[in-house]
Image (tube, helix red, strand yellow):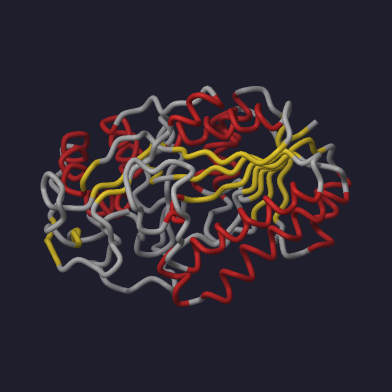
Length: 357
């Protein structure tokens, strides 16, 4: 019996594949490389010294997806595959709604067809929108503020309806906070297309010399240093959370939602200081005007995952920064060693950054 991992070449998906293989699971991986790299598949095999089946498949291709289920004995699915950039989703909402929602509908149709009813779904803390209080618990109001977040929220509602129609389904919905870090080998990490949209890869690219400086959006928030506070979680801790969710869905039915975060918040300036300590590199930055919609503080209440899944984040901010820097310093151009990449949806400026994420 195998675990199907959609989007398994992505940042979180690839680290989860490693944890699955190390735990003795058989995996089948599919990816279409919209925001990942083919080199990742061989890297997973190199780190784990394990073989697995891989398919280059778009989840929108129903016939190809049939082939995966027909050729493999699938027991459960971990569903990562999606378009994922918040800013890009605002420029291309129809593409995001079509890709993320339609592909999930097709996947669930095929799972039902082949009687595979165990699913771990990759959701996001963006479903909470601007939080009314912190820490954020799973029963906090859901008010997604951008097309990306709304696709995740809509899929969550679809999965709730799916279980209501058929009580044999077992579904875990995992709401991530802010994954950073990399595999301790330095061989696997975050390699965004073009200008990074998130804080840590932007910091590491400033440190390596690819970008000149970091813009910090606002220093007027009611926090210790005035900059926005977020919950950063090591990507390996996040990957382990998927294994715990997988264990749960194999012996229960229903739909459960879990936050995956540390329960601690760090400001942008605290993140810069921690990275400078870990890397020995100075990170030049400039305080610029805050952006509409940014919130002061956002961090998780992870108590439910700890009690129900037996999961808790174990890696601290120093280790997150050290691992992120090891990856970037060993791979200055990411997986594509000799060429720069540029996304048509990224703002072509060395100063661009979503500084609070």
